[in-house]
Amino acid sequence: MTRERRARPGRRAGDEVLDDYADEQADLRALLVSLDDADWSRATPAAGWDVRDQVSHLADTEDVARDSLTGGPRTFNDDVRRYPTGEAFTQSGCDRGRAMKPGDVLAWWTESSARVRAALAEADRSARVPWGLGMGWKAFVTARLMEHWAHGLDIRAAVDRPGVDTDRLRHVAWIGYSALPYAFQLAGVEPPAGRTLRLELTGPECVLGSDDATDVVRGPAGQWCRLAVQRATRAECPDLTADGPLAELTLANARAFL
Image (cartoon, rainbow, N blue to C red; front, top):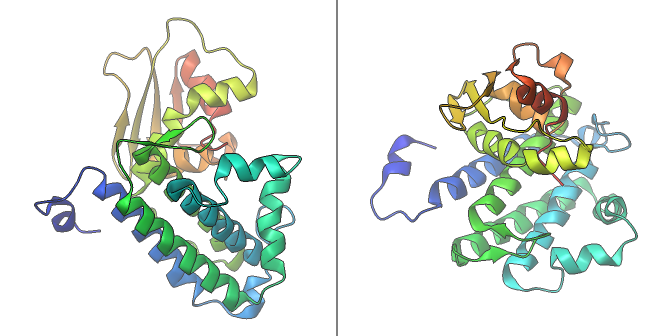
């Protein structure tokens, strides 16, 4: 997205992240339309998932996202209860796609993502989206962008077509930072009392947290974001540094998704 588009008069609060979400999907679509049928069957880093499964998962969760925004029949909080586990809910989308041809899966995701973008544009941006305990509109858009970026990494790895880190990573960096309380809770660890955290990231430049934070994580945004979406281990992110015990705990437990 150009700076001129971001600065255009008359834009609403939240338009920037919505545009970046659309751009993230456009980049993924440009890759997907270039793949042949054999590429769609290539194994991805996610155990047991090929490219078709990755796109099917995105399409299915976009269907659920749209219904969660509009009050349709498959709202997240209702639909996930139909399955014994969260993993079974996720697998159901893959199973649907496995019965489809690659071109049909691509069409499914393309149409579903377009409907989500339209629903987001029309939604009340001050209302909470009923997803889990509820999410603010901007956080929800950011989460959908993060989901597409993370699964896009898997797809690109499978077909050996690495992408370029863009300034959209600032959104992924933010959600990884914001999700730290959840990540610590999930890991069963207690943050050290009285410590606060600041992220100082580059490429794109992104600073999160107070200037007077006791602890600091520094390094490339791409490495932080890959760590937060669990597409890289700490050992695979050698340029991330931790100054302080909370920073160390952060790099050991970051997780940006449910």
